[in-house]
Length: 486
Image (tube, rainbow, N blue to C red; front, side, top):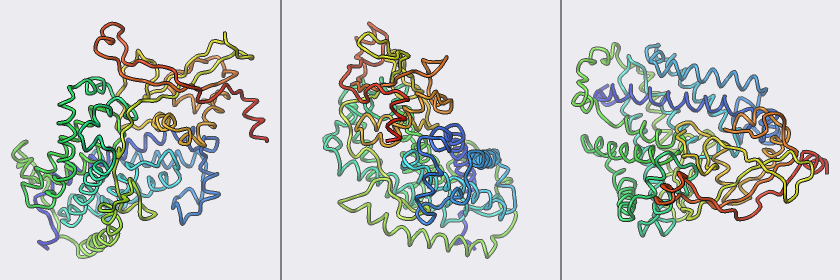
């Protein structure tokens, strides 16, 4: 079936699937390391409480049928193990039904987590991993040629990811249209990285070039994905380079890496032959069996399903009320994407502190909790964490923008600090109370900005911060308990 097979994409499929398995592995490691404090039975937003009020039909998940922290941990470890086996190439040498089953289990497990993850899992990269992970089920194994329809479906995802982000920007903040958004973005983005300070201090004209390049890459280049090679490959290459630029300028979980992974699926084997001498691998990559009829029928049916489900996301792309990072079906099969339609011009940070003083007053000494990723200590250089995702740190950025984003998890977070909850403390970089929990916790709102070059030379600091207001007045565990009883 010549129409079905894409014979110049064997290595592209191999790279794509291995890279996607790596992203899955990171996602499952994030879950296993953070779920007890965030979603566990005694977590800030417990899964048992969620599944008790939200039916399966609205949030399909294994955990509607059974949940314990141990059960959750077991399934997440299974996901991590299967991801690792796929990453090292075991999955692709299995018989086709077994290969499909592994990818199906990965997708179903992560679907189950996302659908009960609530605020912690409410971002576009979660739906993106699920959408792409679903298509991976139907990409075949080493014995079957890459299916052309699924490769086109992957390009359709990449198109919506890039074009949707571009449309959100061009319709949004005026700074995207006057090319000044990056005068602020590197400083005010949710979690700056180790090079963000340097990006922020690039000359203003270069920032305009960055924004203009972003518009070209997101609003024009995506259409070239559907043109013949080498044009489609060149378009994907432009997107990969742009995404690598974003990778080194900030921490955006695995969003940028997923775009890169999708871009790899567009690069034909001819590209890799030229660059790396792929012809030496052709004996390994050529199929050993013909394409099964059932497989061709199944892949075609899935492609038609994607086409039908794409109507709402495609309509959203051209809508004046374009939704950002929205799912149009319960299983996140075809979604819409986009980010930073508006850019904050001032950076706000919530600083959380505690004290052992039983009667806090003007002379009380307050000690600051340190977070792993978000800015706190002005002497600390912003770290690199992506593609690993620090969910608490990310939500703290939203909390600083508006107290409404902090409900209801922030109150639960403070309560767990007052109780000295070990799972919660493991989410932090520094606990200033190693010998026992504080008597009181408070939170203050600060304005942060990057130091100037002169300030950095003089002090060695990366940030300058100025207190603005009280975010949460001092509270004690007894007050939290009494408030809960009322």
